[in-house]
Amino acid sequence: MNVSIRLMIPQDKPEILQMMRVFYDSPAVEHTASNEILEKDIDDCLSDMPYLEGFVIEGKNKIIGYAMTAVSYTTEYGGICIWLEDLYLKPEYRHSGIAGELFAFIENYYPDAVRFKLEVEPENEFAVKAYQKYGYHVSPYFLMTKER
Image (cartoon, rainbow, N blue to C red):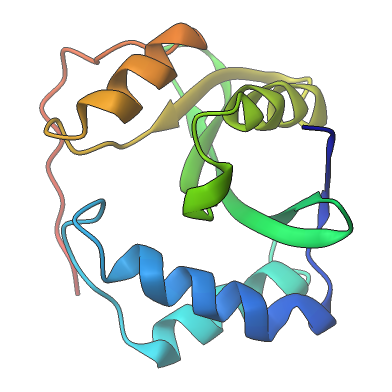
């Protein structure tokens, strides 16, 4: 399928919010998020927030998915690290290579990045295999977090 990927625009917000709701209510994420948080995420993508970018994936002139990336720095690799925070494709568009097109787009969009990261539930074997196909590997680090 021929897809295009572009930055989010304000008119995308309702459809992106619907997809985020599905994504954050699924087993793909450990913690669900309120609509207020999801709306803030989209608003931050649309603002001049320097750490978060939102992308829309389109096919056949309609939105079929979205992605969000966060920018950080990795001292271990000495440069910019891009976290693929969200990657969602509507079910009927999965297993078609679109994720590979998105990864290539993201790598080209951030040419100075030295590392790309994403999280995936270990039980999501299909996603793990797909990401490995595109060069991602399981990190030996144990991720720890603290929320406020």
